[in-house]
Amino acid sequence: MTPMQARPTAPARRRWFGLAAGVALLSACAGVPAPPERPEPPAAWRDAPGAGIAVQRDWWRGYNDPVLAELVERALRDNTDLRVAAARVAEARALLAAQGAAQWPSLDLAVSATRSRSLAASGRAVVSEVTQPQFQAAFEVDLWGRLDALTDAARANLLASETGADAVRLGIAAAVAQAYLGLRAGDARLAVAQRTLASREGALKVAQRRFDTGYSSRLELAQAQAEYRATAQVVPQLQLAIRRQEDALSVLLGRAPQAVPRGLALGDIAAPALPDAGMPSQLLRRRPDIAQAEAQVAAADAGLAAARAQLLPTLRLTGSLGQLESSLLHNDPIRLWSVGGSVLAPLFNRGRLRAQVDASAARRDQAVLGYQKTVLTAFAEVEDALAAIARLREQGEQAEQQRQALAEALRIAHNRYNEGYASYLEELDAQRNLFNAELTVLQLRGEALAAEVNLYKALGGGWGAAAGP
Image (cartoon, rainbow, N blue to C red; front, side, top):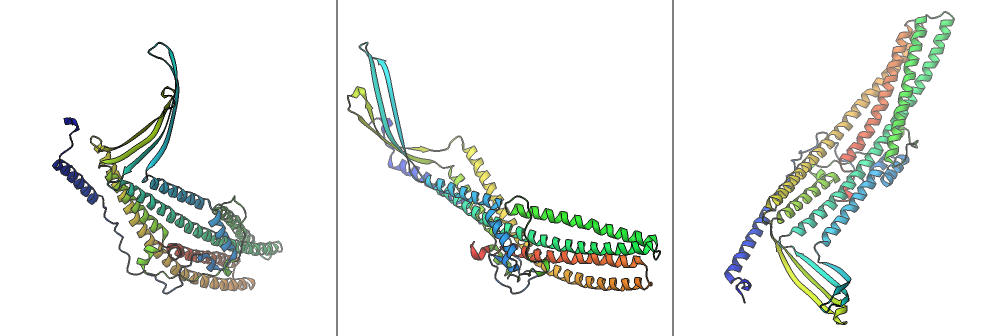
């Protein structure tokens, strides 16, 4: 045995193994990131509605409008954003399968065939045919858990894609419900405007007749004409808003803009029972976007561990088995095989690998901060929805009482005008105020129903109970 072939002594082997174990231990200790800190939840909701029903997965049925339920279910079936989310899930699932396969040995088949004509030592031309089929196997020994970390990252990305699709589903259902309720509120406002316009037209005819017969001045006729034109402007404005609402709703349904079927009138749509908001700390397991943010943090953790493992040596085992067949061997093939291994340790490219580790650490910090922002946003959305429900109810009650008072004022002003105790301007002011009050009541009614939708969306829409974190 030559000096170049001498095996390392036992103390030398122990030193090398000790050094490798120490490097692995340091890498493992440095590769465990701290868990993300959750923002401190509030002790209780400031506008807690008290005990309510459990949040149902199909909460939109609580409005008791079959058309609304059908539109939401159609959107959940045909919406393009949901299809994109489903494609992302399929992509993440395929990437997980590919990364999982990387932990197994690879086996390839290579076949080479050549035909050549050369000059032999005797000076004669020799034609030879060589065929060499060969199986090649390779396997990377995952000493430091790099492949496991990459698989964990792919699995966490799959979970993030799935919960992200659930978040899109919840958002689409809420958007369709809000668009439909806004559409019915617009229809109700348009009906009031058209009814008021017809009343203004009748009043204009009366004013024209009184002016023609000399019972009123041109001032009253001009005032009646101005009030009619002012109301006539509102009708196309509301019609345009309805058309835009229909177009937006059609896009959510995954179809070209077209007329949207109607169900119950705005006044007949039932306000669903308030859901049980529970404790603020329970919200962390009831929303899919929070679960998605958690999965993204887990994926970033695994990516950071894989990046740190690249700083350590890699061990790769290889083997091949084949045979060589040649016309020069007189049909006596030769079997070929090889077994070996290689160790690759980074030496002069550690700057690049260290930069990749720093980039992975920065991505992990971004994921943690994104998770914290998602949690804080969830708390704020629930608080906003609860406050909107409480305040819109109060505002709606006051607006309804104002409408009743203005209706009484219009009746009195009309009688005073007919009896000659007041001018026509007084009645016009009462009509204008009542018209605006009626539009406000209907708008607040639609906003109150939409606030219920926001609360169900903010609470997770039943995802936590149906799908789990």
